[in-house]
Length: 202
Image 1 (cartoon, one colour):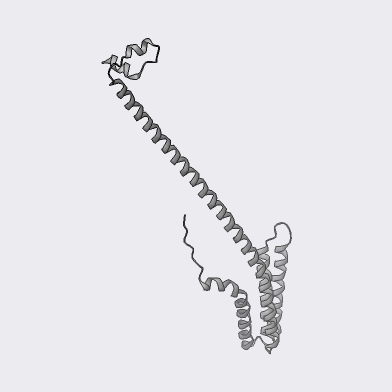
Image 2: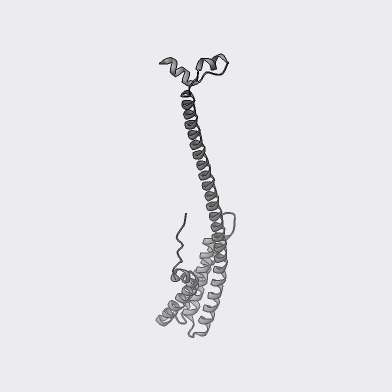
């Protein structure tokens, strides 16, 4: 019943919290590398990234509407749209001011969206832990009741066996008394004792 409680590793706790910042930072770094390799002031590359960003945003809109809308797919599509827009701006511009500003905004938006999912996940985890604890307590109570019931049945059986043994000993002792007569008991209308049948058989 005693379960070992293990604390999660600090890296497992920090990694989900750092994921939005790592994602936006990776996009910014790759965009600046792309900027240094010919994307700066390239109209064709800017048009390509704009088209990809708009396509991802349209996919997110399509995935979020209707009864069959999937929030996970929509969130992924919007995140891709934002990442492509950030990469396009960071790759096209020649300075760092605008890309860093967009990186800060994208990171803040990513943490804002992630915080919503973290709260939902934490609420579901707490609910699950409470339900598990309640079921564990209920099972423990049932096991205790069954253990008490089994113990009571064992004690009743022991008491019955002891009573039968004492009764048999009393019958033997009474039969061994001087002047004890079975026929006198039968004539008085008393019920016949089991030992009478045994004596008649012999």
